[in-house]
Length: 539
View 1 (spheres, helix red, strand yellow):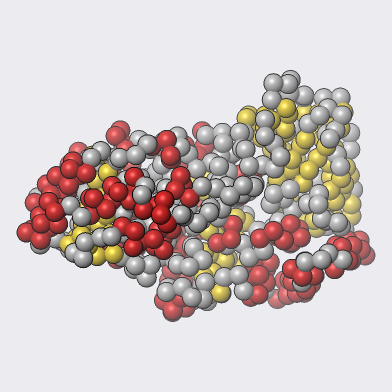
View 2: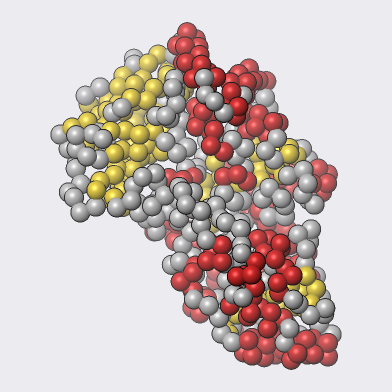
């Protein structure tokens, strides 16, 4: 620890347009005065932007501390040599290079090459030196020798991938973009954007490759669209190192990053990549525990409404700057169709409190469910009673409707615990969401963001609320104030409302239709093009 008792945690370093961009968190013990920060280049003070408190509790060993996010952009020294130093108060800061930063404090020989210069991590900052083949070779040898001396086999194969990436980089396609949804399935914004890129390949300036598990039921369909690489394969690892842009629908790292805990040993090779977050659905509650800039270092985050963009911008926990956000609409919406049949889709979302988190730094990892505890939960009791309601099932039979159950993918191993009536059709993992949205006439959910797809088609939705909304964090989109359908808190109430809509032909009421029109920024099926243009505008 430095003399001032604080840490400076650099989580992103980028060299662009002849200048250096640094993003860091200044850490101080809670309740103590925050020392003044000074950033200098060869003894000359540099200006930086202060974005205020950044209360991310998953940034290493920082419990009980105050974090302040800072960012600096400044031209590089013309001499190609120099030293950047962080000061906190009267003493030099203790600097840690971590997260997705191109330099890593824990990696022997860590070195970042850019703009004819080499950047090296130092305990109090960054040393800049002129580029030369000899210096790069020495750094690479030091890193490889340290890896070969490590016990795990997974460390010993890292030099192979590093050398392969360095040798193949000059021959790889220009603007290679890796696009992904989940490992086990596509059918989300990643696939939609990949489809658009392939449909417009004569005009786009990139080579898109989709990442998907080979056992996915969607593998064959994606292969018919264009090149697909098996997730977590050696080809995926190599292409990831060569890629210029990583486009993801989910922030969970193992859905798009094949390296896991060994990623820091490739940090310098990955630093030049653009990281684009399409998102799975519209963010209506506070997801900053996992969707923050310290964890993800996104270059671009997509929003579909002005309120969503404002929530990203104005919530300090996310740590997004305005230039890292783009109001484009989700690519998935470009491919939505309305072919409604007499179908009621019941789609509850998952529950964090039913899983519980694994201890450690990554809040996105979850334990498996305890099946017996799951069956006895209020969640299962409510949805079992609703889907088994004689009043609902008899009315559906009388009016010619079918009831379909769309469980969250996390619940599929436990579907037998719901013990559903045979008249309820369970939609499997191989069912395309696009088809569900097209054919459904009414959607019933609790908190799922899938209602936004349904509402985008101007179809009615209902909210079944029986549990504590505190499970979902601070809400930026309030369903009572902003939602697209009625909210019912009891089984009988939601059953009566479903029957009412079925009897009326499942039409969205004008009051809620007006809300939909005001909410979505775009309804022109040009979201994918706007996303593409936004990525290119980031350089």
